[in-house]
Amino acid sequence: MIIGILKEKYFEETRVAMTPINIKKLINLGFKKVYVEKGAGNLAYFKDQDFINEGAKIVTNKEIWTANIIIKIHPLDIEESKLIKNNSILISFIYPHKNNLLLKILAEKNITTIAMDTIPRISRAQSLDALSSMNNLSGYRSIIEATNLLGRTLNGQITAAGKILPAKVMVIGAGVAGLSAIGTAKSLGAKVIAFDKRKEVKEQIRSMGAEFLELKNQPENNIHEYKTLLSKKKVQLEQESFNKIVKTTDIIITTAVIFNKKAPILITKEMIQLMKPGSIIFDLAIENGGNCELTKKNTIITTDNNIKIIGFTNLTSKLAPQASQLYSTNIVNLINLLSKNNFGKIYINLKDEIVRNMTIIYNSKIIWPAPKIKLSKKQQNLEKINNFQNQENSTNIKKNKCFLKNKYLLYTIGFFCAYYITQFIPYEIIPHFIIFLLSCIIGYYVVWNVDHKLHTPLMSVTNAISGIIIIGSILQINSSYFTIIILAFLGTLLSSINIFGGLTITQRMLQMFRKN
Image (cartoon, rainbow, N blue to C red; front, side):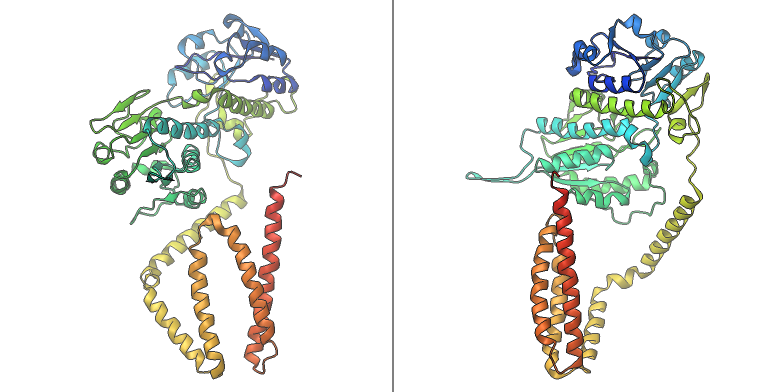
């Protein structure tokens, strides 16, 4: 079978669907003939000679359509759909919910159509996930573009002329693009605040050093998808929270998308009026309608109060070499999956859940959307148990909410318990017992308020403290009081576990950074 790599014709597209390095991998999979359209990689800084050196053949646009397998990035336009030969295979982004006419044309010509945008979100399909590859770069580039227009540094500085505070960046939506934007802004020194309606990404956001915006009185959700953003009450609640933050924000990156539907409007005209002059809004959801009320496709709008609103699409083209490499690697992984045990040939196995989700047209029939992936009985049982436990926990929290909030009641109970214990221990031990209680309270607040970045240094400090505790407990082991002997033994045991456990973990962490 012959593979054909087309030159992209999309607006300001600079990427190419296959890089020279990955041409060699296709040949190793048994596809001895790989055609590349003349000049396909020029804008991504890949010369025709680079493809020839790896075993590809440079051909004209007319000859490329003789290939059995056509690989490209964007969906075929009407002109290209007429040129593709019958009974061939097409691999590209398709966006089937937007391109009904294209699907009909391809079905009539019996084009087996495999969409790179319908890959299921399962661990086995991660190496094929072209959307994640591209969104990762889009998130990075959005911060670079916004910073370029902002006209100030993102990091804070202390100079002879005075102190400069770090810029404040707000990211709405913590998907792949959102997390990439958070990481980039944070690495450039900005103060980052992020919002996502899915509470499970809270720890992920915090682990990257950003602040998680948690809405008060937000209703519980069982469905962790953006489609629930359609609820008017939730959108209104989000907008009210954003009103307070946008006043001091320098850059806003929006990435909230609802699959197969228009993106929700989260940044309104009223919010834009509250922003500081010179601030930037970058709407990454523009291809789905946009999260900002004023965004326009592929343009930069400047409002009356000097807020710049960017609606660039196809951001990955601004990182053409890297984006092309990532996309072509996803394609090679897909070809490897489709050609297993069929050296040099494509086999469409619709029993494979990945292949079934990606296949849009097969045997002249449109078979999209694919049926939902069925979980195994074990997975279903685990999911039921998890859902039940989550519901049970949420109901328990609601029941105990008022009680747990009353910390003064808990302090009072603790005080009486401590007083009760002192009635049954020797008078000489009471000062030591009070010191022990105070150290527990101080230790709790110190450890829980330490930033996550300082956990490793904190482990070293606690090891040193544990060494002091061991010495103290050994000195008390010969006491005449049985209670003191028990406490001394426990102190020695627990401190030893802390020291040796901490040293073991530290050693394992250090090994992770060694080249060998």
